[in-house]
Length: 157
Image (cartoon, rainbow, N blue to C red; front, side, top):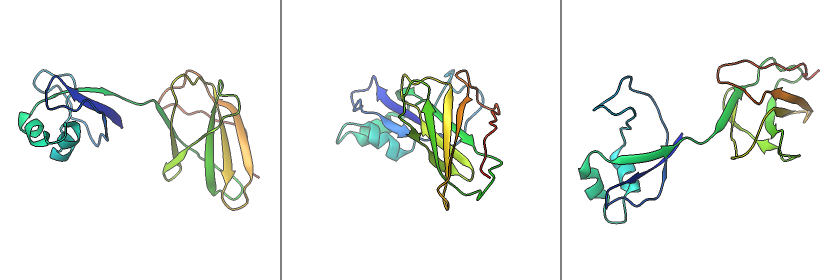
């Protein structure tokens, strides 16, 4: 998921839209390191009111984008009921303000990470049926990396 807006075109509104990346094209196109193939509807959302067709007919536009910081992980080997109802994340500098994660699919949970939060991160898991809760303290290190596995010694009985 990216947030992007167009610029250097008088038809651009300057307001950002959210873009979901569904696949990637290896190699540069037209000597650009990055390019996005946007639908006509997306072009319309980037335009000033009444300028959608003008922007669409431009063909190529400059896009300024950023990727929001997010964290997603799979919760595996859950004992007890095995039915996870809630997963929360606590950055080390957030005092006791737990971030509620969203279930992405299956055992994968995700959260947008607010700017300025720091690890290590603690994870709190609550079962759906019995409402039992466990906390894995500082289970995700501050220097976490995508694709790495981090384990805890806590589990439901």
